[in-house]
Length: 454
Ligand SMILES: Nc1ncnc2c1ncn2[C@@H]1O[C@H](COP(=O)(O)OP(=O)(O)OP(=O)(O)O)[C@@H](O)[C@H]1O
Ligand SMILES: [Mg+2]
Image 1: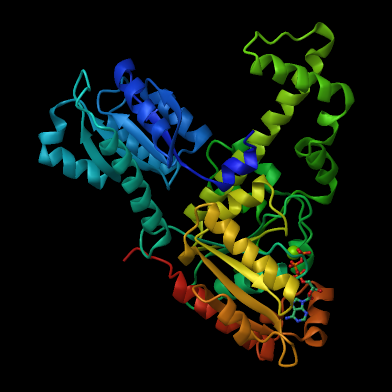
Image 2 (image 1 turned 30 degrees about the vertical axis):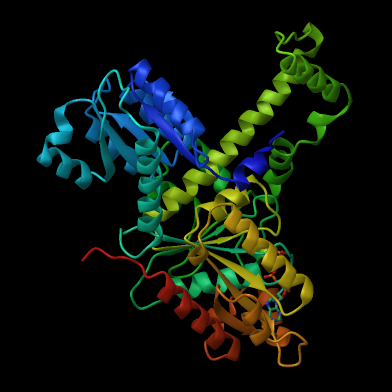
């Protein structure tokens, strides 16, 4: 059986199909199912439904016919980009539009990636035409989002499968340095360790609100919503906190699975699965509907949490030049979402074998998830000349990936800042470690320059 994780790790391009012609839908759906790299995720038969599905499912590609009931298709495509900046839209032109150059220009100006001519009864419509167009559109948008230009913010996340390597220390100091550049980039630090976020402690802040407070405005998280919840923690940098200590127990109870799998509930699931496998109607005894309800509630909470993660990042990207995400050292759905939506994942590696192994494992997993090599880099932390494993050894091991920074081991200097909840890069601008951090920040900005309106 394929688990949620399997699915996320072997990511296919998720396509939403918007058409009210059943024959066309059936044919294109079959193509998308056959395609090894594509997966149809739903159909909409009107523009309104299409927008709703975009909000809820955040597909990678939208295949939309130009005769969809409701709003004009180009307006729908523009709204789609607004809701979901990474959407790649392809128009299936049933009307004579495909011959109209002005229309084609208008479509491309609206951010549409391709226009394909389709004509009933669609027998001439080829599998390869659809699949090529979908994959090409997806790649165009991936390049656009991660490349220079586009006026979209840059999301940088710090990750490692190994704990205690310095992810949070580096994330907080890097965010500070990015926020204090002369070009006055807007930067925000966001704690994506939702089970036990500790960023607050590193920046000496006590939050009274967290990312969970964005749930009521999930349908359209504005800059004001973000600013209400993510206060300035110094002159220029904002912090969006993970669920607060007081919210933790409730949050964990909602997202973790343990009680769902216990005893009677496990046998309930087994029975239901057996019935489904034997293609029988699933019967649920009166006494057991509560298990089903519990399972569905958990599923719903999971869906909301994921939607919150995804939409928060989209909104951060729309409103800040640099978005720095700290993550935990394990993969959960929220972390996967953060990594998947990052322009750059910085893997933090310390010069010891377990950390080197963890970094290599993360590189493999990220590539399996569909991140391109250019989106993955690493930073060596706690480097020391005395270590058996030198930075050069690490560089050789990870050739093909950029080393963006090298920060020396110096706990004696760092300790007071950690214990006071202050940032070394802010309060000790002349410290050797700050110089290394500045160099690291310079490599990051070189790698991900912020596009600005001319
Ligand atoms: N360059 C360094 N030299 C010395 N000590 C360091 C250095 N970088 C980080 N540390 C220390 O290592 C410890 C762990 O750092 P940090 O909390 O940033 O790691 P982490 O990867 O975020 O951990 P976790 O997996 O628990 O989230 C902290 O006490 C920090 O002060
Ligand atoms: Mg940490």
